[in-house]
Image (tube, rainbow over all chains, first blue to last red; front, side, top):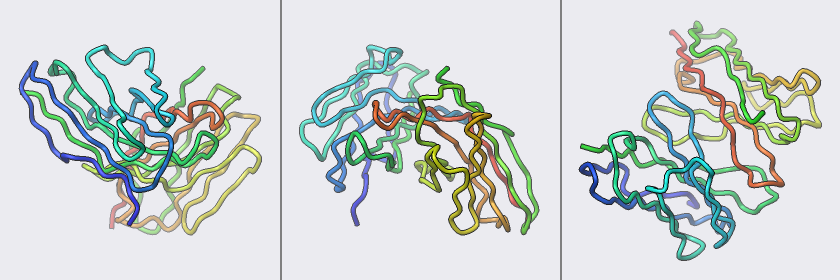
Length: 113
Length: 113
C-alpha cells in the first residue's frame, strides 16, 4: 500500500547527542512536511519541501535541519537535542502545491535523556 | 490572524449521542478546512474536509458545517461510538500557498459505552 513511513517509531537519545529521523513515501508526492507535536498540543510545522525547494518556518530553531535527497526520502536532523525537543515528530506529504490533502505518517516519538 | 481556535478542549458523550466540536478562524485567505482524528501514539488521519464554497459536507456519520460569514466551522459526529474516542484537530490552510496547516488546539473526545 502507498503510504508515509517513518523510522524509527521510537528514538531515545542523550542530551546533546545528534539524532536523525527519517521519512519515506511511496505516494510520489512533491511536497513533504515535518511537524513537531508536543504532548497534548497541536502539530506545529518546522519545515517543508516543494520538490527540492526548502522552506524553513521563521520560528524553527537553528538546532533543527532537514535534507531531502530525493522525492521519496526526507530526513530531520537535530544537531544538539535538548530536553525541550522531546516530542512526536510527524512527516506529512501533499501531492502538489495546488492539491489540498495532507497525509501523515505514524510519527517518531523522540525521548531525550 | 493565523490562529484557529477550537472548543471544547474535552468532551464526554454517551454512546449513540452527537458529538459537536467547534472551530473559529480569522484569516479569510484560508481556503481549506480539514478535520483530523488522532489516536494515542499515532499520526493524525484525515477524517473529512471542506472548502469554503459549500456550507455542509457529510461523510457517513461525520458532518462539517461551515459558516463563511461567521468564520466558523464545526464537526458533528452522529451516533457516536466508543471507537470514536480520540483527539480531534480542526485545521485551516491556504492551498495555493505553502499548504501549511494551522491546527486548532485539539479536542479529546471520550464516548462512554
